[in-house]
Length: 457
Image 1 (cartoon, rainbow, N blue to C red):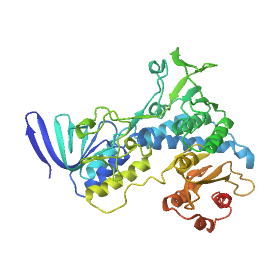
Image 2: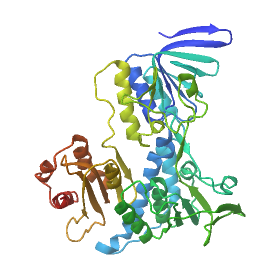
Image 3: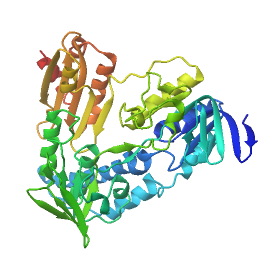
Image 4: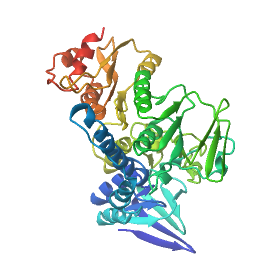
């Protein structure tokens, strides 16, 4: 039962739970709690579902699948004759609009909420003390708690002149219908690398510029080297350790000054990271620092009295699967159900380039920084038959003292799938001796894990 009290021009509504921000975790929590019989108010001022279904995971993977189909035709001559392909991005753009994003309309997502007995409110929610959220002229008072999942937005570096140009972020790129002849991608993280390869496969002249000494700076150095080699083989020009002095735009052309050279292109994609959507959220009203880089949470995702936070804003991983995982912890807390606390030892990540770059747990560097006595082994991914040599690698990071894996990476065309058994091994702390005693099917790519395990000293 919803109790509404009017105090002058401000209404006060008593409910069980308020969800502010409906990214994947917030949407998931609202639906599950609504179906559990709680009075839930879900608040979102943009699109229900967040970045992933409209500008991130879903449309980009549709574009990646199309680009892989194009690249696959070029491989025919290596094994089975001849073939030609004429890429048509217009078809991809239409599928993104019609099938992935519903033309950037969240009607179906809103209906999922209301069909789960959740009250949906379109607007910007602001905290107003413990358990209180204000939207417009209404204050919602939550008896069981408030969940924040406001997510992030694209950010841009403070490069001289950049803000005055019509550059793209991922949001603009997934909505384009016509591709440019040339583009510079600023940012060699997962988003930048994925889009660089997509565009190159559709015959765009791509230059990838990264300030760090290597691509995918948070991954293993071996992964970075393998991906840079793959991108270069497809015509992507990669500049690492690059210092962009300025960016300008005139007469339809972007010009980037790299000091020792200038780059002139038709379009510019900025993929240098994300900023948290915390401005104006009212964190100070619940005793939190509004200028903090992230919202600190405990292992039950509690940020303050009657307040939970999930997703990117917790700093535990900018991945949809982490947000959903955290939401399940919060759901159990609010419903008073038993269950494990949040555990981030085996967080997985996949960059969906070709080859894919997949990882779980700690890198070698992070493990050493944590004081672990590290054993490391790296090996080629191998071959599935003598004609299908796979350009890739597996790297295992082990704790000598405990004789378990604490991290791993796989670079290969099916890296994300091969990673699954390694993710389980890290999560379950499976003894190395147990892993070495397994049967590894022949001739699978994952069989290379057996060889690398044997090389661990």
